[in-house]
Image (cartoon, rainbow, N blue to C red; front, side, top):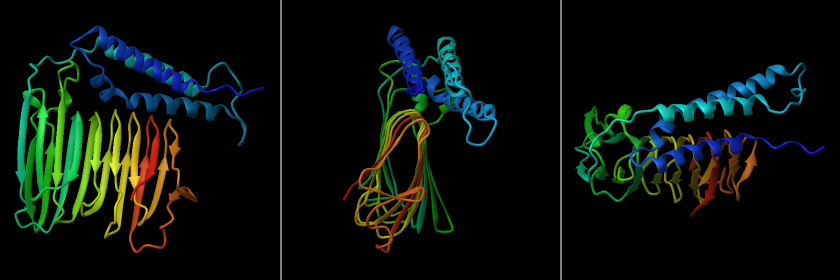
Length: 309
């Protein structure tokens, strides 16, 4: 008898489709605020369902008695019904929409190293190198309350740079004219400890050539692309986590790479990489003096590892 395919994927598509359909019927409403606020409910419900399946087994290696639905599928269905109900009853905050622009350059001011924390609740983030100073910010945003807040201090030769979208607890994601587009460029003069937190949106992180020492990226609902290709001069430890959406990481070929990648509901695609225990490595691993060590965790979506230059 052929095994029954899981219904988790179709249930997720149905739930997201219902939210997008409701969004198209209400021009002043969008689904992303509800998804951004409550998407962990999906993971919790699915995990509780899987735990229920495990507890129903009587002996190690025994599977739960067959039924029409698994605990994971029932948990996912309940979570999606709750998510749709929250979306239908949610009342977004009304705020006039405009076309605002913010630009600022931050100088290093004598710092020897920098820890930078970027937090964008909703919108698209493009981050790359090319700044003559510490950082150049060029941002467009749709509401006055979402003007980026930039703070920079120096303590003992270490710079602390904080760039965040204020009022993320009350952001309204609806309305087709609403947008947040951030373009941040960093310089390559100082060692950089980079931490990025995103809610709903697209992240395009072109990090090749930046003097990174550590990297931490947290994605929410949307796609995330991280380019770490190139000839790195120092070893890097990094952690990348995705929420709802695809995570794609481009990695170097001439520098050793070791990646521990685990998917939640999605698969891990790593063409050109070899398995080394529970990790993926490239052909330069163990041979080059520099190593990129990454821990990548996916939520609902696929993890793609690509080979760059």
